Image 1 (tube, helix red, strand yellow):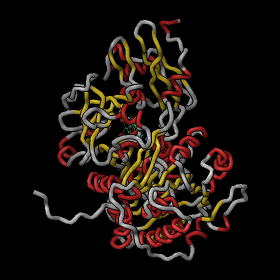
Image 2 (cartoon, rainbow, N blue to C red; image 1 turned 120 degrees about the vertical axis):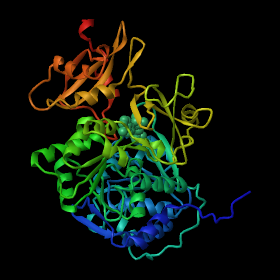
Image 3 (cartoon, helix red, strand yellow; image 1 turned 90 degrees about the vertical axis):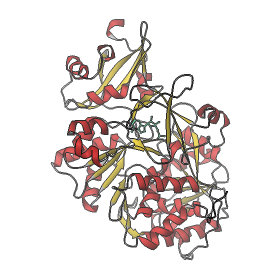
Image 4 (tube, rainbow, N blue to C red; image 1 turned 180 degrees about the vertical axis):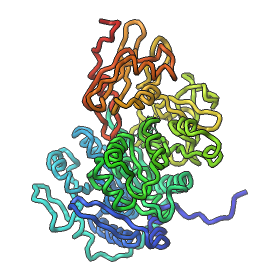
Length: 544
Ligand code: AMP
């Protein structure tokens, strides 16, 4: 028997309309590429989105067209998210840190019709435009006064929107209509596209709002350091107007000092980003001897957050939530806030141990770990296997890429994350590694994340990574690469002593190498692939 309830298609613009009508004093604050600060309410944003939607329609854009962005976190980028999807288009966010080849590939693969660009990225467009789709229209996200001299025929964003009606009769779209497109910045092969729908995006917003209800609430002021150009800034452009928290967009200045100043001035309550960003902020906090005013929570994910980083925040009164997810998952899959019972009953050490794990699944995300034959393994905190996921916010295949889709999905329709993990009886996920980063030594696995986590707590270590080095007898052995904190170079014996408290002797790194900095991927993660390439001919002590 069928239920007898209305069926209203889920649509992203409804989130902003809701925010505009109900959270009337919440605001969006943006550090602009023009150099000043811009602020307005969700209501004003909604009317500007309507104007922009009219302007996009006048350009001849229609349902299904891909409209790309190359921009920092700011209000115009936010407006594009909603206006593009509102007219039935697909907002294709491009990561400006991708290589030229990758950028050309994805604009061609997505067949982008329009590219909307922040001032900073004009040189990229000038260098690559001849390789982008021929009929591309370029829009510069600035006002007339800031239009640059350029051989590219840029339309002016503000001029396009100016004078257009501040209301729009939003087309009723089927909820499965595509709304956004983000390519994974995989380190090998061509990037692969995750094509989000209105339905998946709205459900993700609900999911995250519920999972992180203690952080995302009316009155909260949230700083997405995580970029709008990569996985929708973890969904914040949607969860913020939904829950009523204000958004503080940092623009291009993401160093510790700039973030501290912005957070302090704007009374940011919660900041979201990858661990590398928080290393910078923690340095600034240590130098000033205080936290930014009002700062009370951090959401960290994208790569494993070291326990020592979590501890640093927690002892200063900042609650850390360690989340895990993927581009292909919209992106949030798990989050690590502890239950009231755990907060009350566990010792500080036990809490930190739990927070260093990747947390529990969000509602609507199913997790399974499987052995090499695809058989499901128990969630007992012991069995380690490849992690598969299923749910309404997870891709069912890659955009226009059958081969990659076939490789990623199992026969029951679950998506293979490429991560190796265990899940304990309380539902906590522990990511051991990307499958390709695991170190396979003598038929056993060594988790590079586990080793890094422990070594990061050493005061003479600013950052570190563990990679596999080919070995004639053991296949692979771990090499520890350290960025020193100051002049002192940590001794191998000291590192071994720290590690032996938690890992077996055969898992100890065979050697330590020191570098000035670690190579990062386009999404701010340590690039193990680049490190492995640099050290591929490395001779470990017993191979010399
Ligand atoms: P991306 O699609 O760029 O967001 O990358 C997703 C991948 O980042 C995941 O498959 C994991 O390998 C890694 N990742 C994300 N969050 C975490 C985390 N909290 N701990 C460990 N790895 C993570």
